[in-house]
Length: 102
Length: 511
Image (cartoon, rainbow over the protein chains, first blue to last red):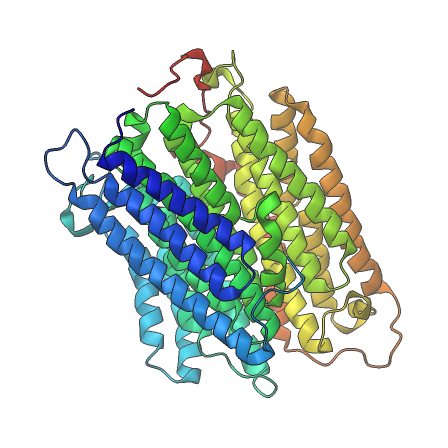
């Protein structure tokens, strides 16, 4: 397989996704878990954008960009919500991990 | 899609709850609750009207802004979507009525949770949007709307326990939706379209599609709390306020199931193998056994009901192995498809009614006792006969005793299992029913036992008990129009269709 720009992007996106997925499960601290989900998101969005320039097309496909913009908005909202939850938990109990429970 | 009649109905079904949610933000607490109850009747009657229209004309579509797919977004309401929208409307009206009285009654102790109403209507808009969507990305957006509203509702009480459960729920849901979106990206990259109908035609089997199918299915399984990924559901559903628990258990988890059903039967037919169906069936069977067993061990009413949700959702997954033809079988001659589909749809409806009723009853018990420990249910029958009856009736439907909706679902599932020759699912179905009977009778035994303390229960508004009882009765009443409902559903493209295994074509490999 020839390694071109497209392959590099795709591989990077898969690696980012895997790093994020691992991080959510392995990290203990709320902040780390939330950042891991953001990294997962970055992988997915990179994957989407890299598909905009496919071999068959001579121009960049605009639809993935529109989708990624929407996806980013949703991801930012979810991350902000998660952060505010984590902050409230810290304020109420002083804890910043889920503790012993899974 | 040209031949279908267009109408503004699908757009209204999403737009009206969204408008109501936004409007309710401008009202004070009292006006907001009133708007909420009136609004629920408004959206409910719109859903009813849509149901009638679909029964009359068949599938109705709406092309948003006049932009035709694949560039524009198309909303379509076919019989399958109409049934889910109708179910959401009926359950939604009862829960709205209950919430009105519930928040009024609790004003002195905790508060009235004014954010409940806007969040619930945004959630309703999201659910209707999900049932109406016809492309992969729209499904992603609607399921995110549902998730964020559901988590916000789950943490409404503001207690540390609920917040923690909510954060875990949110993280699990984000992983689920990211996995789903990854699959969507792969599919878009290889086909250049997101429209479900077009995808069903152009998708060819290949490694990319198989991988996309796997990540999408995994994402949806996390969202619907299937067996190994159910860890977030019991704490989140049990720590929420009673009407919220009812919404989450009765409606929200069904959203992910609906998506999976649509995608598997309409889009991914070509990438599925017999083994994939068996694997999903195994997770379903494991959820039935594990969830029921855990429910039996609980000492708190709400946790028991939440674990029972994990189990009952497992029954839904057992429908998938029946839809996929084993090598050598032909979908046209498979007479177990209709029972399998009937089982799935009736399990969705029976569980929605019964579980909403149980969680609302749990809310009544918490209100009367101040806590939900099961051993305090003693003498419930004498003090709150209506609630005891609601728990009993809903429980009977969960067990699957005739003539409840749960019975119809489980009977049809057993019929499908034996007709298709996949008899190995039967022990799990029967054992699940037996375990369910165990925890339901454990509740009822205590309800009939004599009380140990004087005046164990504080008085609770009658109307709350009536709502719970009517929902429980609903899980029985759905059996009466069963025949007509199945006939109605047969107008849906996917209903009753099977999935042919790709093995016979031998078309593996990347195009």
